Image (tube, rainbow, N blue to C red; front, side, top):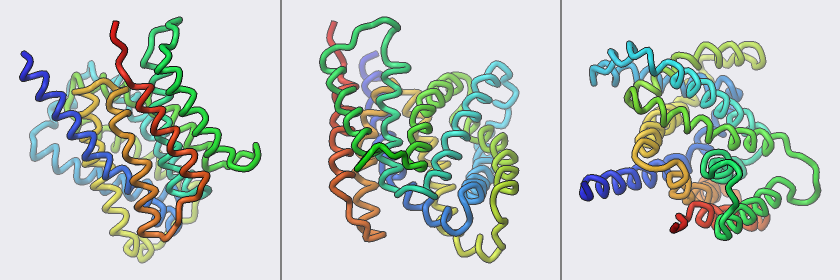
Length: 293
């Protein structure tokens, strides 16, 4: 049994490291499309590309029959609802805050995952975990309130997304017990597309076909790499590893995002971003440490 367990663990860790690099670039891909198309239209067309590719992939893999497994419907629906809400908040937030802030604050899902799912009710916090909670909370306050206690709407939207992400991950993990990752993503896309299109039509100006074509590269990178490849890796890693460990290994992404934004946008990271990111990343390491009984 040990070789099997070890191989599963290493495979899960490799998946998380791979998706960390892709997810780090996500705010950078998305910000271009949000600026030019609007938040909901950017989300819709990226998801449309991902869902189209997933339909072809599911047909090729002959997994369409998994849609008949009715016992998975509840978890699939709840996964779709929470994931769609999370990404709607993130895309909208990019109208009001920077890609670096989005990734740093979104990483606080590690903290909320621990608080919501990583401990038993009425269980006291071990010292090392308490230190992690304190560090991540300090980092969050620095990022959310850099000068005074005035709220930035974009930062608050991402914070709400970070709170909902652990719940989405929980239902994804449950759904993966019954169906494949491809099926989970396909169902999510099919449920989300009409909802996102309706929101985009109601609240945003409709972009021209030329505008969509001009953003196709960024839409494709978001749809294919982020909404398909990275999410498949995420679901499989959740299937192989505990949620808290997956989140801990994901710690590389916020720092990579800061680097990518600097390289491609020339946006030099501020002292506030660094002062906030460091305790958040360090806190994630402490908060996910296993305690020996």
